Amino acid sequence: MPDAVAHRFQIGDRVKVREAYPIGHVRTPYYVRGKCGVIERVCGAFPNPEELAYAREGRPAQPLYRVRFVQRELWTDYAGQPVDVVEVEIYQHWLEAEGPQP
Amino acid sequence: MGGLPAGAVEPSEHDYALWEKRVDALMMLLSRKDRQLLTVDELRRNIESLGPEAYDEMTYYERWIYAITQTLIQRGVITVDELGRKIEAVKTREAQRA
Image (cartoon, rainbow over all chains, first blue to last red; front, side, top):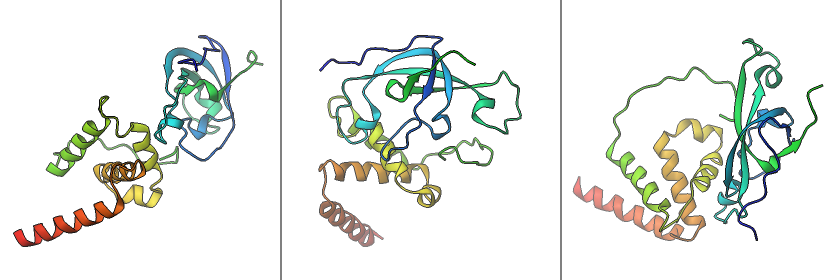
């Protein structure tokens, strides 16, 4: 088994967070599930916390990305500036490739 | 909690009680690379499984010691029976001291 899963995304890629709600220990916040963002940086690859939380190895390591979301796309009643963003670190297995912004 | 609405964050300095420092030390010792009796992810999972009511009622280090204990039981490092007997013994000891 390889030590880490290959990276699928690069800085600037548009991605969509999977809209899944499994039970268990998931680090992907509810408020970004099903939302689109842009890869801000590649953080490296780390053992999967969903497995570590149950005392397992979490290997192969999953690539981790910092994904940038526009606040107004996350919160319909967001009252701040349209340029405001929030960045969330998300593991690759929660991300899907998304086409360019319509 | 979990992205739910909450009040403003109130930053405050706070002197740690001896037991709180001990809980912190326990966590550091148990998670050390050469020991690895628990991971921070197990700690988080056990804290998050407390449920909203208990989460709000317990203090920070109360949540930690609860989660550390749960993890050690889940991993078989300690048994429920050992824990119960030890707590009983400590209570008796402290009562005699008082």
